[in-house]
Amino acid sequence: MFNIILFGPPGSGKGTQSANLISKYGLKHLSTGDLLRSEITLQTPLGIEAKNFMDKGQLVPDEVVIGMISTALETNPEAQGFLFDGFPRTDAQAEALDKLLTLKKTSIAVMFALDVSEDELIKRLLNRGQSSGRSDDVSENIIRSRIQEYENKTKPVADYYKRFNKVIHIKGEGTVNEIFEFLSNEIEKRKEKIQATVS
Ligand code: AP5
Image (cartoon, rainbow, N blue to C red; front, top):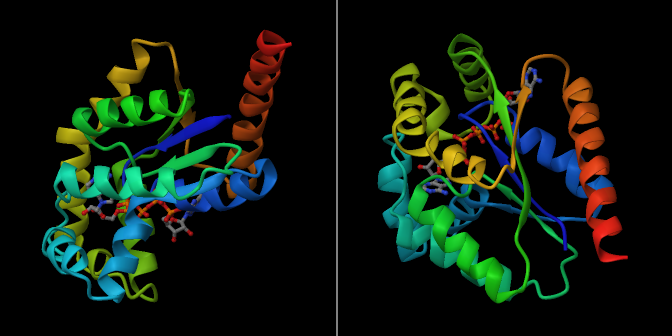
C-alpha cells in the first residue's frame, strides 16, 4: 500500500492535484471536505452539525472527521493506497490516522505540503466562489477565518510528520501541470524505494 497526504492551506490546490494523482496511481481519494459536503447535501444530522462550523470557516470537531475516515478505511478494503486530502488537520487527527493505518498494517509514505502565498489563496478562492456554490468561498472574511484556522491548528501537523522525515514542501504556485509533474517525480522515487525494500 502507498499512502499519501496532500497538505496545505485552503485554496493551495489539494483537490486539483488529487484528481490527477488518483487517476495516475490508482489511489483511493479521501477528502474530508468532500465527505462533509455530501453529508450536508443529504441533510444528515452529521451534515447539519458540520455546516455550522464550515459556514464560519472553522474546523469541524475531531471526533466527527475521525469517525468518517475510520468508516471510509473500513469500506475500502481493496484499495491499493489512499490519498488523504484535507486530513489530518489537527495533531489529534494525525495520531488517530496513524493508529487506524497501523491496524491495517500500513502507514503514511509521504506528506506533500503545498506552499502558496496568502494573497494568491484569497484570489483563487474568491474567484472560485463566483461559481462554486460553496458558502465558505463567498466572503473574504470567511476565507480569512479558514486560513487562520489553518495557521493555528493545522500547520503544526506538518511538524508531527517531520519527526519521521516524511514531509516534502512544494511550491504550489505555477501551472497545475508543473506542480503535478513535480509531485509525480517525487512519488516515483518513493515508490521505487518501497519496492526495493520489499523485494
Ligand atoms: P476542504 O473542502 O478540505 O477545503 P479547504 O482545505 O478549505 O480547501 P479547498 O478545497 O478550498 O482548496 P484546495 O487546497 O483543495 O484547492 P483546490 O484544488 O480546490 O474543507 C472545507 C471545510 O470543511 C473546512 O473549512 C472545515 O470546516 C471542514 N473540514 C474539512 N476537513 C476537515 C478536517 N479534517 N477537520 C476538521 N474540519 C474539516 O483549488 C482552489 C482553487 O484554486 C480552484 O478554483 C482551482 O481551480 C484553483 N487552482 C488550483 N491549483 C491552481 C494553480 N496551480 N494555479 C492557479 N489556480 C489554481
